[in-house]
Length: 257
Image 1 (cartoon, rainbow, N blue to C red):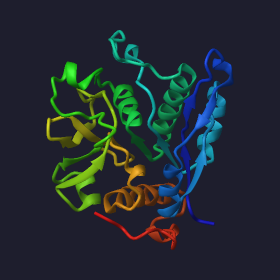
Image 2: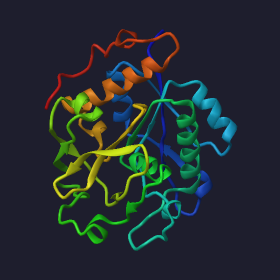
Image 3: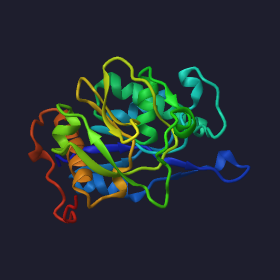
Image 4: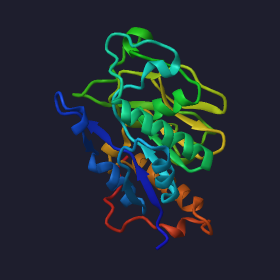
């Protein structure tokens, strides 16, 4: 079988007073988006050993870092401000190892929401800990009743090539955002208030978006994103060079814009 195996991280649910009995959670739409694009999603349980992380990555062709709570602000030399809720520590350490090892292996990485913020911080960026307070934005990026909004796409970017459009409608739910960018990365999408909505790396292997594409499975934008990423995972496999290695699922729903 030539379809790529795509490693997917999981969020954490902590039972009250029993952190050692945490549960792994994943919105099934992450897995469906990957399957619809022709890949095999592989859930990656939190591991506390680097050798286990390395073993995981030897067996997958790409990595998706999913949404979650807030990146620990100590990683960008700040203390937690009111409203900041740092991620469960074991998950944070696990995903730092995953990203750093994937980067060393030039493994394709797709960051979503918290995943984008983590990538940005590990690449030397800083975050707004609260968009409304720190960026003085009047746009509500955490509106659960009306989560859809438009974002612009930077021309001549990889994201623009994937989307084929200068603006798209996305669904987002976040109160933090990337403030500064590190070397080799650039902002390729912004909301109406100027908040960065997507970043990409110069070497093609890394793309990250602030919105939740998995929540809009019938959107043409979502399908293009995941198809591009699965294709990149295909091309990462030894001996594979074209999209024919992983045709999209014939059961995929018709696209909507």
